[in-house]
Each structure stands twice: as C-alpha cells, then as structure tokens.
Amino acid sequence: MKRTMSTGTRFAMLVCAVATATWVLGFSAAIQASRTTAQDHDHAATTTQHEEDAHLHADAAKLVNPVKSTPASIAAGKGLYEKQCVSCHGATGKGDGKSGALLTPKPSDLTDASWKHGPSDGEIYTLLKDGSKNTGMKGFASKMTAQEMWSVVNYVRTLNTSK
Ligand code: HEC
Image (cartoon, rainbow, N blue to C red):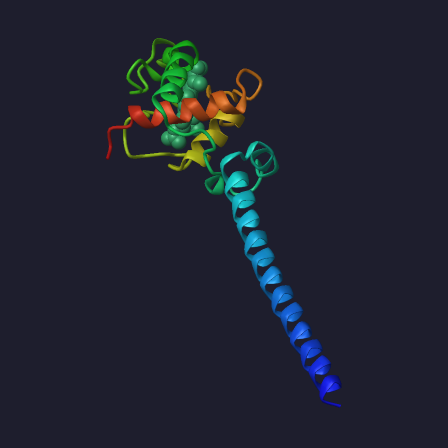
C-alpha cells in the first residue's frame, strides 16, 4: 500500500513537472512569436514598396516616405531636380525658372510655406507622380522610379526655407 502511494505521488509530481514544462515552453514560444511579429511589422514599415503602390489612390497625406532623407538621397534628388525641374521652378525653387515664366498658373514657389497641393511628403510625392491637371506641372511617374521621386521630395524639403 505504501509503495502504491509512493508511485502515485511520483506520478503526480511527474504530471506536475510536465505541466510546468509545457507552460514554460508555451510561454516562451508566445514571447518568441510576439517578437517575430514586431520584427515583421518594423520591416514592413520601412520597406513599403508594395504598400506604397497599393495606397496611391488612398489619402496621399498618409503615405509614408520610405526613403530616408540621407545626404545620398538628397544628392540624388538634387541631380534629378536640376535636370527635370529647374527650367520651371528655378535653381533655388522660387518658381522663377526660364520656361516657367510664360505659364499660367506659374510654377509654384517651393521655398515658401504655402503648399497648394498639401505640405506632407506623401502629398508632394503624389503631385510629383500624377502632376496637376491642366497646368504645366506634368506627372513624372513615367520618367522616374518611386525611389527617385521620394528622393526629389527629400531634396525639395531642403529648398523650403519657411520653417
Ligand atoms: C514645365 C514646367 C514645370 C516643370 C518642368 C516642373 N514643374 Fe512643378 N509645377 C509647375 C507648375 C505650373 C505648378 C503649379 C501647379 C498648380 O498650380 O496646380 C507646379 C507645381 C509643383 C508643386 C506643387 C507645389 C504646391 O504648392 O503644392 C511641386 C511640389 C512641384 N511642382 C515640384 C516639381 C518638381 C520636383 C519638378 C521636377 C521633378 C517639377 N515640379 C517640374 C511647373 C513645372
């Protein structure tokens, strides 16, 4: 009888140990899972290549600029601006480029605080991509990649002296 009791106790202890181990494993698996999710999320937030396409017609202001405003991005944007934008917007962004003079409406002053089409990166990007209907501002979607346009946005920000 004593022996049976002792086997029973051992069995109970074993069950208990297995239960604890299972709980601990389950718990660490859950932590692991939440870590992985967080990482995936961060990753998705910084590389929004597909997201960006999917949101082109959503609220432009909500678009997150996926290209960090690094010196390299700003330099790339500057190069593109000098080739494609200076003729209308002028070297410093005042809207005083030679070919812009005859246009109505006039090319926007990119250095001031007024943004007809919205002040956020997403709005500037969307305008750059799609252009402004019935004005000299044509869309650049066929001339630049998304990455290039975001770099131009980063450069345009450096021209703005309103802040
Ligand atoms: C042929 C002339 C022309 C060229 C080239 C041109 N733009 Fe424009 N841009 C305009 C005109 C005109 C407007 C005003 C549109 C309006 O009033 O809706 C404008 C408006 C803008 C705006 C909107 C500013 C605001 O107040 O919301 C931005 C930003 C802009 N241009 C950036 C650029 C960039 C960057 C390039 C080069 C990649 C470029 N533009 C090339 C003529 C031009």
